[in-house]
Image (cartoon, rainbow, N blue to C red; front, top):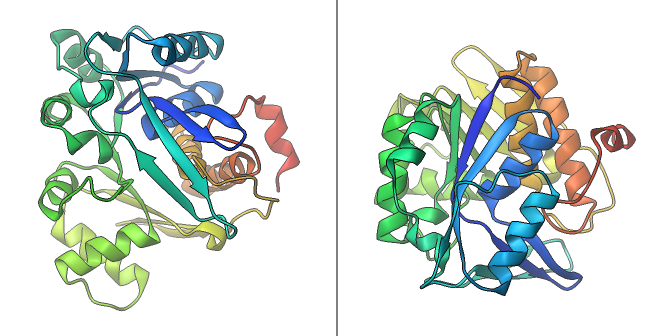
Length: 294
């Protein structure tokens, strides 16, 4: 395990797939893969004091994920999500509201945890409720390096809220659909993706780096000094749940260990493809298994 310490904040849940329920939630997915790749990562979240919640705690323990900062609510249930995978691999999510992770309270303990970490990873879904939203903004004030995985889920976002998060972002990860939505909001030039990313940085000057994932078309990394493309690795897709989270995890793990951006993107593309070839966002694997991809 490296000396790096990355905190993931947000939802933790069961994804209900046709094969059965699978551990999920974008921040938890990132946390899981970071640990698998040798980076110490912890999750700040909340579950309910119910059977689903206790099973999540058992699953975290079995996978070596620190659950110390996963609080237990005695008033809200553990989150579940119905996942529907279309014939073309398209995914729809039915995300239940008023669940345990909607009420994550900010405490001095988690503030210190974030302040002492190397990075904070978060998404936009956690901001749908006032309590968790306020906690996130408090933690963003403490973080040295803020990684925003946009993860838009209708109807749980607004232009104003997303822009307020972009203003506090150091590294931004989003997909083409999300770039299109934000571009429309801010009247970006409808030209090349390069120009749109330049415009994004002009509008939000704190953003140092942008990762744009493009599904089967690979991904693009953009900063003031580098613009790099990486191809996707073709695999037989089981489902794409969590493949973007896997991409971000591998990129962060390798980049923050000092690997070149090009190499970090290659590792990210491999892990993303591997996860897409399995059921659920957090398949059990050994890093050696990734050698089968590419």
